Structures are given as structure tokens and as C-alpha cells.
Image (cartoon, rainbow, N blue to C red):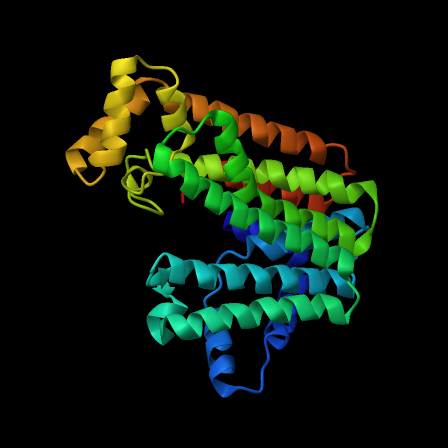
Length: 325
């Protein structure tokens, strides 16, 4: 059995019901809209976000979820899908999860409008049901994701990212969404409890480890998930590179910065940068940091009573680190 299926087992019923509810939450009177949202539903990924929502809710509440849990999972998917649709327009990307992106099939104007539609659907689903606490969690996540993305753009121009700034970028860009899913799961069954913050922190730590793992793929020998060296080509500052920039001679540092800034399309030069980062211990350092975040997340989980849901969350934390793409 695949690890993702194993993780999903204790919430299989909820996930099936969630898919039906999620489809209904996107319904519209406009045929074109329904055609596009049908396309979106049918090309879903691993569904890690709703899985976090349901696993946390069930762990907190003796295996029970509420209607709020389903709404919370739907809202996070609606709003996150909206940001992805907009991202593809911004990046001029034609593919998403191996399928054509919305903008590739229906052009930018329609894609932006679809993103706006999904965003408003998500907001209304919360407002119509007075789920203002859930809406606040999601809105904070969207604000932070936008800030993180802009902070990364601002810093990439100068290539002067410190490790502290790097953590702030990935906390906002990646970790905040997983944090929102986990705190949503807790808030849906135990509103205003200390659990909401504990689970937010748990999700944030998983998100940090997840992003560092992504950084490490750029230095892999096999092109899984994304071709190696792609972050360097895009002038993205990743943890292995930041570590080496701060632990090499002045001469090596200027060669590295020059390579990333002016020679990022030169395959041979990119290979040299990758080799240099490996030789200087950049990968080992990043792996150690990733494992430290993983351990912190597991320490939080250890404070809860054992259950099938807790076991699945533990598998999820390990999967984030061990995944191959």
C-alpha cells in the first residue's frame, strides 16, 4: 500500500464525503464556470491539505468531525486553488500537476476571474455559516503567503538573504498554509482552545521541513519532481546555497553570486555551483535543519493520546522528509 493511502485510511470516509461537498461548494449558474471547476476537481493532487484538517480534527475529538470540519477543509481548498490559478497566470505556466493549467486552456482573463470566483466562494462559505474564526485562520494564511512571495522577489534581486530571512520567507510562503490546515482542523471541533495554536505550530514546523526538502531536490542526482538546478536558474536562494555563501571565502562568494546572477542558464556553470555547494557541506547542513523541524513537530504530537489519527499524522511528518518528489 502506498504511504499516502496508508495515511488516508482512518479518514477514508470523510475524504470521500469531502469531495462531494467540495464539488457542491463550487457550483454556479454559469455553464462555463461549472465546466472549468469540474476540470479543477478532476485533476486534484495528493490532497495533503484536507487530510491534515480531518486527521487533526479526529485526533482532537475522539474520532469525530463536525460540519464545520468539512466547511473548513472546503474553504482552504477553494482559497488555495484560487491562489494556484492566479500563480499560474503570474508565472505564465502552462502545466499544473502534469495537466494543462487553467490559463493554458482558457487564457489569462478567464483564469484570473476563476481565481476571483473561487476566492469569493470560499469567503461566502465561511460567512454564511458564521465560521468567522475559521475564516480568520485562512485569511491570515493568504496574507502571509502573498507577503512571503513578495519578500522573496525583493530579496532575490540582491541575493543577500540571511538564514533568518530565508526562514521567514519559507514560513510565510509554504509553512503558513499547512499551519492553517492543522489549526483549522483543531478549531473546527475545539474552537478557542489552546489546541488551535498548538496545532498551528505543529503544521508550521512540518511546512518548514517540507520546504527544505524541496530545496534539497534541486541538488539531487535524479530529476524527480523538478529538474536539478532549477532553483539556481530561477535565482532562488535555497538553504544549502545560503549556508555555503556564509561559510566560504570572499573570492568563492563573489564567484557564487556571479554564477547565480549572470550565468544561471549555463548548464556547466550550474553543475559547478551544485558540486561546490555539496563539497562545502551545504546539503548536510540543510538535512540537519530539516530533521530538527521534524523532531519539533513530532515532540508536539507526542503530547497527544495514541490513536489511528495520531499515527497517520506521524506518518505524514515522516513522509514530508522521506518523499521522493
